[in-house]
Length: 199
Image (cartoon, rainbow, N blue to C red; front, side):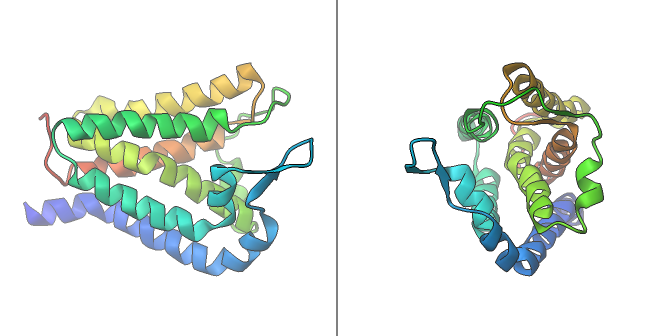
């Protein structure tokens, strides 16, 4: 039983190690490219959480590990509370912080992977998209051990991208769906390693 739990956790552990290595390798390049503040039209600098996380990738790793620890330690009704709060965080980061624009669309789910090797910014974007759905997946995995829960991150991410397209905010990108679903899948499997509320 203990070996089985370790196997469930292995993809999550490997992702965390990979994310940490990428952050160390790309840290200087990323902090030069990205700014913590978002400049508005009136010239005022406004604090934006999404810009902080993008400009300081080490914070994403630290926050991700701490959030995962909280998700793994949660029990009973606390799992549902955290799931609701975390879904709110996902909506905040993916819809409420987006600027208005055209109906931009990328239907190639592997477009980001093709640029992964050559762009530190793209690497961090992909890792952030995986991180975003990882705690969400852990909470789902602790609640249910059914095959259909793997569809929830896919449908949620797809709904977010569709909303971005219809509302003309951000960039509707199918590669985001792929990376979010990967994060959710890793999280669900990791969630199965702990105590589940439902069988």
